[in-house]
Image (tube, rainbow, N blue to C red; front, side, top):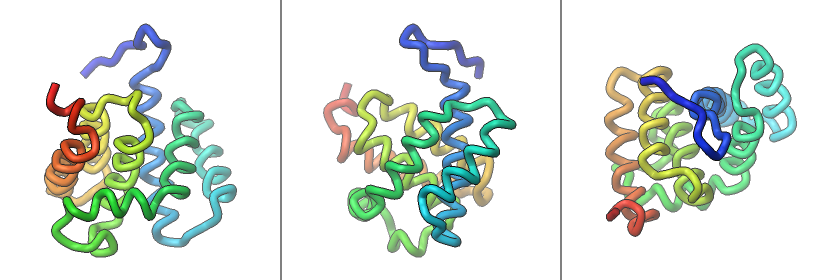
Length: 150
C-alpha cells in the first residue's frame, strides 16, 4: 500500500513507523517498567536511525502510560481473559489502539485498527492479529459508535 502525505501535513508512513516503535517501547515498559523519561530517551535515540513522527510517538507513549488503567478498563469488556493474560505484543498493540480510540478522535477508528493489526502481524504471534482485530472491532463500536456507524 502506498501512502501519501495528507493535505493536513500528516505523513501516514511516519505515523506508522511511530506506532511500530511505540509498540516496541510499550512492550519494553510492560516487561521492565522503566520510568517514562528513560523509556522515551531509549526509544527516541533509536528513532534517529529510522525516520518517524517523533511527536506522535511521544504522545502515544505518554498517553498509554498516563491512561493505562482507563485504557485497560475500556478494553476489558471486549477481552475473553484479563488484560494481564493477553500476550505482551498483543497487549501493547491493544493499549496503543485503546489510547488512540479514547484520546485521539482526529485519527479515524479504521486507521487505528489497521495499524494495530499491521504491527501485531509484524511483531506478534502468527495469529495474534486476528485476536487484536476482534477486540478492537468491538471496542471501536463501543467507544466510537457514532463514527463506526457512518
